[in-house]
Image (tube, rainbow, N blue to C red; front, side):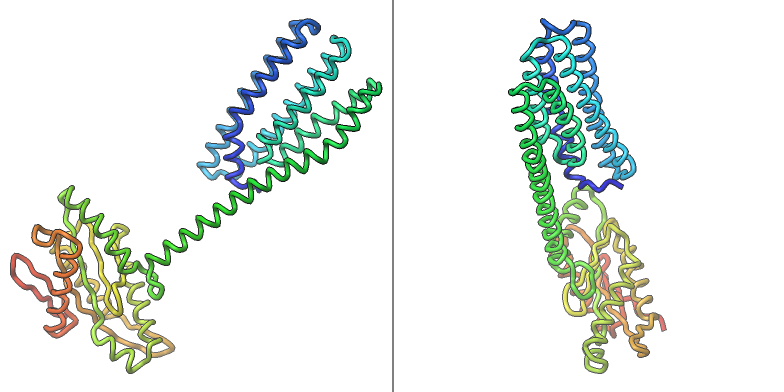
Length: 377
């Protein structure tokens, strides 16, 4: 698997078009400078290979983008190897240009070729340092042949350039490493900031005890869903749930038992809901569910199933079995109750009615008729 951070690969992809344009400009400059000396056929073939190389590098960059989107680590690793191979070929082509200048151009044109190579190496530090291993491969494939050429000439000015090249090597390696580390540090800082924001968002929208959404999230999201349902003229219903005699559980078994009941209740109900439903703990032992695309009759059936499931479930903690019941109030989106606040208030009123009618009930109002579903004996 590729060990390169995806954001570094993205940086390389973004740099590639500019780097290839610059490479072709320098290639054209070389063509013009050495045209009086090097046979035109050789120069044309050399330039054609440079154009093909640029085209391949652009294709390679597109492949990186595609594999990143697919999160295809195997192909990312293979594409990275192809990228390194293309850098070796690019270094070979520039060294071939130096050999052509040695064979056909008079002195001191080998110095022109040397300066061009050093400039290309330095510029590559900016465009290729994101893949540091690839840059090092390109760097040494470029610089070593240039040093050998200068040693081959052996004159004082050439020896001086060899000395400067030896000094240049560690300086450029350190520069490219600093560029790589700076980019990576910036990316990691951005990732850490993003994680922190996500964690803060999670903490601000999730109830710490039950791990379901909290009151704030419920009202924010429900408001948007109701606005959408109003435009599309679809049904929305709201359930208000409250644990019956929850205070007695805390008094008789302790607050740890009460917390256990809340968590188990939230987990049990959450498993029965759809992804489109919004389930939240409003406070204390009170929960609410916004049922998207659900009519009042459908909501009543869902509520009764939830009520029955909780009534028949045994909550066992440390060998102690506790039985609980819940009361549920229901409201439906309509002209009279067209906002989340109104829906919530009406469902809360129905919950109050369910509790006053003996608890362990589902209560709702349909066509101005109060309906209270009693628990089965």
